[in-house]
Amino acid sequence: MKVVTGVVGNDIHVVANRLIEISLQARGFEVFNLGVNTYLEEFIDAVIETDANILLISSLNGEAEGWCRELNILKSKYKQLKDVVFMLGGNLAVGEKTTQEIVPKFKDYGFDLVFHQVDLNTGLDELEKYIKANR
Amino acid sequence: MSLLQEEREIIVQNEYADSFDFQEIEEFVKNASKNLFISHNFKNKNKMLVQPRGGFPTYEKQFALNEFFVKANVDVLPLTIDSNTRLNDYAMAKKMLRLSEENEVDMLNGYPLVNHGYRTTRKMITHFDKPVSLRHGTPDARLLIETAIASGIFEIEGGPITYLLPYSKNFPLDKAFLYWKYVERVCANYSKLNEPINRESFGPLTATLVPPCITIVIQLLEMLLSLEEGVKSFSVSFSQTGSVNQDIVTSAVLKKMAKYYAKKIDCEDAQINLVYHQWMGAFPSNKDYSESLINTSTVIAALVKADKIITKTRDEAFGIPTKEANAKTVANTQYTLRILQGLPNIVNEQEEEILTQEVKSIMEAVFNDSADTLWRKVFNSIKNGTIDVPFSPHIINNNEVVTVRDKDKNIRIIKRGNLPISDKCFEYEKSKCNLDKDATSIVNDIIHDIGIMQ
Image (cartoon, rainbow over all chains, first blue to last red; front, side, top):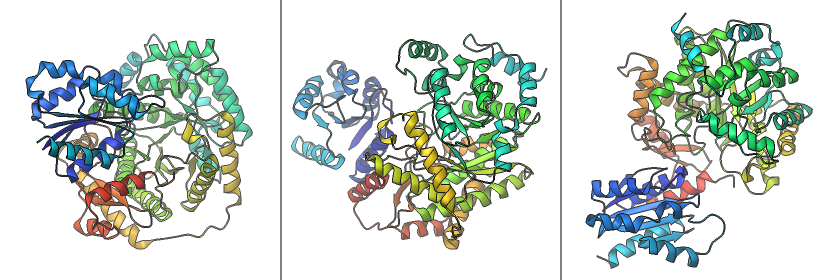
């Protein structure tokens, strides 16, 4: 399966991004890593270009919301995105916010899987479970 | 007028910069106090020089910080530049400087040198009569360096590789090489007037599990790029690796190879210095532990016989340090250095041999690139992964090399990507690690290895 990944917005935190790439490869995914400082439109372009099954966006600086709220609008523009799994993970808010506040908000924006301050491997386990269940 | 001089005239014509009087600046450098030159201090002070980090937006605050440092018996003053200036956004730096001056808040994370100008800054530098080191992170530092030298700052940190690969996603690397070539030439020309201007490379890179062979190769290449333009005093540097053994081996090989390659291009007359950075990775949130870590770094710097140490502070985990905390580290580091007497000379021949072979293989591959100039060879080598910096955010970086720590905390290469190290060396690296684990546990090990000091 193909995954496009990267860090959204003006966020340059590269360490986790690289670890996500290594972990996905270890689990047998084909990874297209756009790296840090990537905009939502660039992610969507890459998903279409590579015909990816999954888009995994990460964010650490807490500014993800401002960069991701247009996802549904972009999804409605391209019918190729219908079967793509949209996943978001990292530290998803500036300051302290609870998972109960954050997860529904991002699901409304169009994400299937949302992980706020969840350990990387747990998040990827959940992704694999989700793919199995929705096949 | 030479082509370089024509370019200089254009570069300094900037609405945010002082009007440059090159003749007056030459006179100033020619007659400047020897104390301002770190190259002079390296030769004449028989001790490791201690240099903190620090930069505040306003002249007054920077002046006050320097006063604290001098009271703490500092050897080298820092001048850290704000992030807007690093990106050549002088308009934003000017606005933020005004806001900082009008309110009691610092709106910049450093000193906007171009906006302050050389006439003003020179007053501060000559007042303290200590060498000043310019710390920045600028890919295009041409105007900044002109302003710095005119101010009396005679040590310039950075380089086309070490100021780009750790800091930028897509600034064009070929441009960075050409902009830094200008910097080297300007430094070389001023070096003829008085004591040499010292150039220093930034060895810590991403400070995240960078294997010593890559650190050393990049140090050597930036040194060669600088010496071939006529620079006569150069500092190679690296940061604490997390393993005392690896620090000792790295310094031994770096010193040996720097001499070897300088001689190869007939530049053995240049003075080469070694700089050691206290731990550059994530710090513990317990400030007392931070002090302990800093003190350990100082002991290692003494073991590796560094010519200069660059300090951290107990506030590191929390942001920009107060001037009190910053000066405290300087005083403590001076104390530790003073009491460290009769350190043993530790040599690990086997590790030195392996590391030397790795460095030589990579250097040879760079030199064998078919391009006609050294900077183009280096550019191609980064592009094709002959040089590969772990955790660089830059799109040109190959990102294939994977490293972990062995049981003694040495950084080892477990995936070499296109690094041209021999099978023998690669087998040695891998033999030190337990690689029977599944990939998920190795990723967990890497996460753990990044945060070892926390």
